[in-house]
Length: 481
Image 1: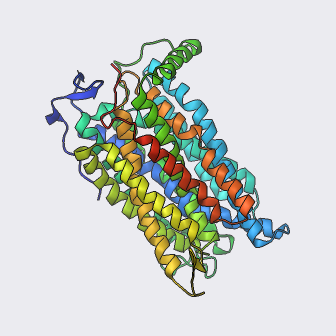
Image 2 (image 1 turned 90 degrees about the vertical axis):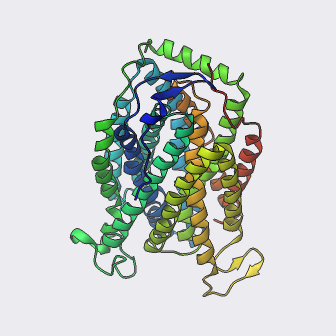
């Protein structure tokens, strides 16, 4: 059950703020608008939970590995190559998001319209998701599907930037952390429910052809062609199309915003001025730099966690799916709790604590395989790696969700109310400017060492660097007047 948001009308109708004391007084925010805004997290989460991490990503890795082995590679090299091409796709998508997000945000702020952009990216999201059905077990269209997946990822992330830009208008300073955390938690519950449905009814074991319930995949899907697992794409598309309806019904652009020139030259001029202004706002600058590194590392854990389980621990898609359910439940609960902690202590302590937890997880991933834990050998039948990785999944889900919610809450504390889409465009820019760094480093380390575990070493370094830069961030932000 999703956490309940208290009515915001009692807050006195303050909907947006810009300084420590100055507020813009507007119409009280309705609960339906807040729930409509939260519907985006619920609707879009399966692309990350089912697509990126727990079902399609591992399935893609196994299909790619088998295809490379069939072409004459040995198994270890094929595993490394599969991880490398997946990281290459994430690198390119991240760079495209970084290059486009600030300009699109500035354009949307000048026009005052975010909803058409969200609708347009939603169409791309649905079409790309549905097309994932085309990845057959024999590796047919492997690289075409890789491109399509990251086109959908680009659309999901681009829509998210505009949705995040609506957050400052939903409540007062104390309420934003709770709303952000509750929205993210609501999204993770969407991931849990969608993953349950897919595992129980559709995803088949490659050994038995049966789902987690012990039945053949629903709707007459052929397990021999892995059609149950391949249905993840159409399922994601349908889920999004249905559950985005409340968002488009209850969330509207504010007619009081915009009215500035949308000529490309004018938009670029305002964006350039904003970028120059960042250099005179040290708290914002250090937050953007810090989050650039720790978010990049976190995204790498999301993108490669399922692949690690498949390639290093030998887990099946169903095992990874169950792991995903555990991680998503932890994310939903901890993200909601993180929102409450944000309300009481502010977002900075929440971010710092979660990054430390993820550093520990990174160390465990590097030091663990099926036959050893750091320098300690393990029996061939030992379940220790499985149990430890389940614990890692709980931490990744819980800490990762809390970081996501607290980071956008912290960004609100550095956001001018007249330029929210541009601000979150900058947030996306710094989140993606080095998006190539983690996957490219993982790809390089994996290639140089020929070892999937050691490929994760750069993730630990990125977390540490982000944590170091966070020390110069003002916990209360520095909203520009």
